[in-house]
Amino acid sequence: MDQDEKTSRQKERSRVAPQSRPAVYAAMSPRAGDVPAEYHPSALHDPAARSRYPTDLHALAFVDPLTGLGNANRLRETVREIATERAADPAPFTIGLANLDGFKPLNDLFGHDAGNEILCQVARRLEACMPDGSTVIRMGNDEFAFVLPLVFERKGAERIGHMLKEVLQAPFDLAERTVRLSASFGFAVYPFAGEAYDDLLKSADTALYRSKRRGRGQITVYSQEIAQEMRRATQLEQALRNAIIADEIDVHFQPIVSLDTDMVVGFEALARWCDRDLGYVSPAVFVPLAEERGFIDALSETLLRKAAEAALLWPKELFLSFNLSSAQLMDLSTSSTVLAIIHRVGLDPRRLELEITETAMMSDADMAQKIVKELRDAGVRISLDDFGTGQSSLGRLRDFTFDKVKIDRSFVCRIVNDRASEHIIKAIVTMCDGLGLEVVAEGIEDFAEALKLKGLGCGMGQGYFYGKPADATATLRYLRERYLPTDAKRPIAI
Image 1 (cartoon, helix red, strand yellow):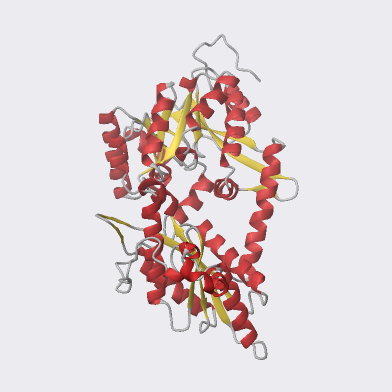
Image 2: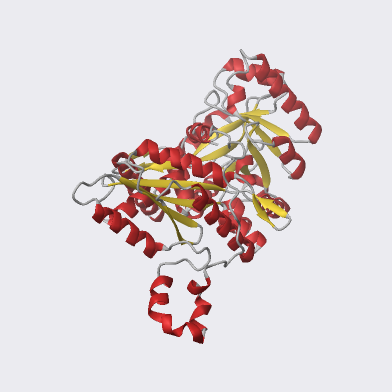
């Protein structure tokens, strides 16, 4: 993995751990569909109710039939009523949006009835803990909204957000099972985030979107700075999409060497992008953006094709290492897509190594395992990247079949002066030797680190000490100057 991208991802791992079970959440949990009878759609078929049609139809238009909460129409009406009341002296008030993180996989796993039950329990919890005078709304699917007339500024909105986050982190009861969820929140304060309803809702949605970008269980209150950040992200997205279509994303290669011989044994492919208007854009920025906005497949396929084409010009004994994203490890078509690309290019699958991180595998371990098996059955080798930084690395080594482990640079950079890091690396090398796994140390910066790793029995390494990432042409020049092919008579293409 690229060092710039790795630094960014390490910051993402440093989120605060979830809090303990809250005291306030024990609201009633109605069965899915428990709604006041006069508001239920079936009431329209009751002959005794026909005389009340005009009133009931109007009420039904403002009620969510699943939870009995107000719906989006009710939110619009409530916000407009408060804004009208305060028109002469526009005192602030706040609206918020909450989106359940990871609800869809639970809904798919346990079924729609269970999903509806969870939504009803969420509704009851939100109603039970809201401040007096507040309104709770179900906007649809797994998104809720609330109007907070007595919350006037950012800190107050953040306090409410943290309280609601804690409430929704407590387990949900589903028959004999319990499940856990988290929620992301976005808030907008009137009139600073918008005076018209549509503007205020758009601001809350922008804040929610930023929370979702940052990970699960995040809280954001809209500000002009956040709006500018979101606009920049959208502009960057459009530029990146255009660059992929125009085939302007480049691939650079960093050598991986044998620590015994100092000879290159392969290269890791790393994405690079220099835009005409934006200049150099770090992969730590554009790769997560592509994953978040749903076009990482297009980016990855372009990069793999270019990397495989470049690898055809290397000596055949050198391997190509390529990173898979978490989104690709949740898509069963990944293995067929990867194999189709390298077959079209003509690269032997046995020369390809795919790097996956433990964090990526955790999104859907069963699906990831199927993808890994299909790829290994075709001859592709699999490396576990960033080893030592995940939550259960030893368990992953037991449950998955890997060919190689890459020790994270956070251990390597301290190996010379930190005995703990030295012992950890020694233990990893010994363990991998017993499991028949190759080991690569990432981020080697100087001779002292390389010498220490060699003394500990680490087989391979990569880092700036052995070579910085370079484009395809420079990589061929590197091989011409430093690599002695196994078949000395065969020239290296230039």
